Length: 450
Image (cartoon, rainbow, N blue to C red; front, side, top):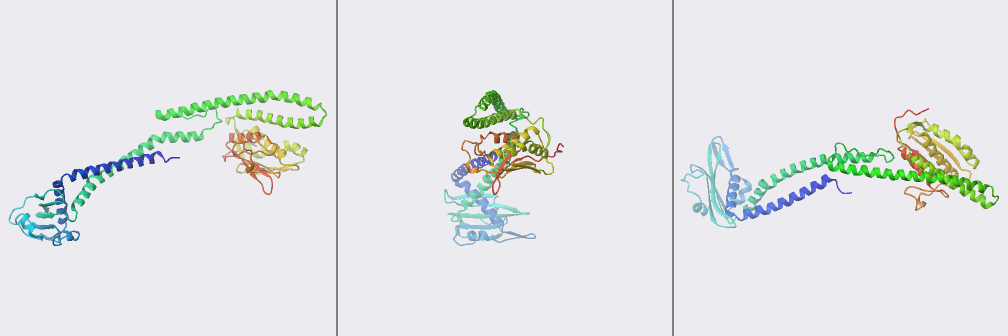
């Protein structure tokens, strides 16, 4: 399964935003790199702002101390960078000068302009001299610098600040808002899809009116829901046709089987007796087909509270002669009479199938216990031959098994009855030998019928 749509979209937005930022970075570097004079102007502004942090006010008196992070640049001889800080009246607060000061700085007696820049040599590395006035309170301080060769790569600091201030921060804020708006929009747009998926999970395929509600859905999602509803309708039509076919075949076979049995009973021959046994199996199979056809036509609209203790007690009393006649034993263990909403006749059919299955395939002298629990559930437990889940028939559906001699449809009937009641059939091995087949139902607040 792929990642959620919101995550995929977010990752793609981030990817394309990163590509856009990379492209813009290349464009900025190309644009700025083609104009070294503009970079000199930006370097002058950046360096004078950094130097201005060294101004110290003591009342109306100003003093200056070179910031430590600039000492390697403007506090070292022959560094290629010189600076001078003075008042407008010509009082020098700081000077790191050499011959470049005399050659390129403005005379002290000259009233300085607000800003000036002179390129000493065109191109790279940057070489320029310039100055600007920075006001501190009511005083105007004039900062002058000269740079020859840019040995400490001030130009890259300038480019880094420009990229951060004018590209990374604005685009990051834009990306955050775009991501947020996109994810909120996707979540709002997919809310009907999520609701439809949850509704589809709750659809009961056995219900004749199972469908997705299309009211209030966007058009595209409503089209998908409509396609699902039409698919359900076609599936129901196929199921109805299958039910009709199964029921018709089962009813048509009943009469010929009865006639064949009457004829075989008149023949006094061991082969005829063996054939009668096989015919009984086939008759039982046909009866199960009829039960399955009747089950497929059932729904939950007529369900009423059913007491499981009463179901178990009735079926043990009804089938006790059948069990005793085949050398087995049967008993019933009740609990606190748990109840479930259901169809009593169908639940009795399920228990009957489980008991008959235990008698037929549990072996001679099998002992059977029918037990209810407050799960709620009802189980048929025997001490017969048991079964090996790993040795199932490869032609059976996943999770099915057949004991020796079984035709396999009985358990399918029981599973269908359990599913119709919102439950499941659980089959487990019982140590040291035997099998437990339990109908487990969902817990619901019911007052069981008594």
